[in-house]
Structures are given as C-alpha cells and as structure tokens.
Amino acid sequence: ETTLTQSPAFMSATPGDKVNISCKASQDIDDDVNWYQQKPGEAAIFIIQEATTLVPGISPRFSGSGYGTDFTLTINSLESEDAAFYFCLQHDNFPYTFGQGTKLEVK
Amino acid sequence: QVQLQESGPGLVKPSETLSLTCSVSGGSISSHYWSWIRQPAGKGLEWIGRMYISGSTNYNPSLKSRVTMSLDTSKNQFSLRLSSVTAADTAVYYCARDRSSESYGFDYWGQGILVTVSS
Image (cartoon, rainbow over the protein chains, first blue to last red):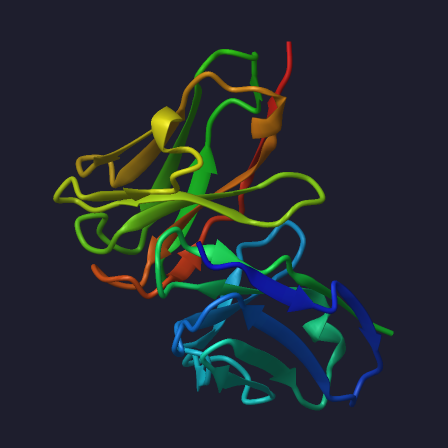
C-alpha cells in the first residue's frame, strides 16, 4: 500500500500570496496523483489530474508539479475563495490512498 | 453535470449492517467504476472500494471481508453494505465516480453523509 504524506496539515496565508502544498509518496507512483479541493458541506472538486494537468474549468491559478514520489500543488495569487481543504490521491495501485489533507485559511 | 447524492440511515447499531445508496444524475451508471470512500472525524480519507457494471470490483483489503457493493441500473444508483459495524466505522461516507473504466481516480464526488455507529 502506498502511503501519501501531505504537508502542512494547516496553513494560513494572505490574499495575493503563493502557497505550496506537498504530497510525498512512500514509493514511485509515476504521475498517478490527483488533487482535490473541498469546502465544508460541499462535494470535493477535482482540480489537478496526473500530477501536472489542470482539470478543464479550473482556475489557472492552480498548478501541479512532480513525478515519482514528490508532488506539489501550487496556488498563485491566492483569493479568499481558495480557503478550503486540499488533498492528494494516488491511483497508481490498489488500494487507492489519500494524503491527510491540508486546511488552507485565507486571512 | 454529473451529480451524486448519498442517502441512508445516519445511525447504525454496533454489530449491525450499514447500508448506503448513492443516486447518480447527469450520467449513466453503466459506464465508469463507482467508489465509496469514508473519513472518520479528525482522520484521513479511506477508500473502501469500487464496482463496475460488469460486476468487477476492487476492495480495500482492510475492509474487504465486510464490504458488499451493488449497482442498480434501473434506478441509476449504487450501494454499499458494511457488515458487523463498530464505533470505528463512524465516519462521513462519500460516493464518487472513477474517471473511466480504468484506474484514474475520481472526477465527481457526493457531498457525503455522516453515519454514526452507536447503541
């Protein structure tokens, strides 16, 4: 089973900031990582596929990078609406596993 | 736009079977794999398993012995049954659509339903 270690668990940033969220895999998973955004009481939104590809319709302020074991979600020009819970998912092997998530606060 | 909505009892007694249904609109359940995921309070997300219309399934080994999934094409719904529940099964349960008939993770999620296991 692949363990995903996501950090930080919580972060606070200011509008206009650039933020990075890390997701590290316990083994090589190629680019088989997706990123999601979830707000309280709402369905999770699919934002990045295969580590680096922006899902159609998602703001280009979001980007992903990485391959193998180290992955990063970057949010540029942070906006108040970006306050949410973000998590990574690996779909390289079964069982699918998730990072623990990052709660992003926008001050 | 595909939408998923979980439904079922919010309270289940220990040792009984948890039963949930996911209703799908905006797309056919006859394509894609359909998954269940859960998140206990204060803990991370855990993938429970998935099912395809052909009957093909993949389950998390940690839960496999207690899990049954099914699809109802007439209602465009899919279901989860988790037997012999304990307090450790208390969680928010989500349904989600896999992106294809392969393994590419999820593109649509439900909002989730809280299920509490308690007498």
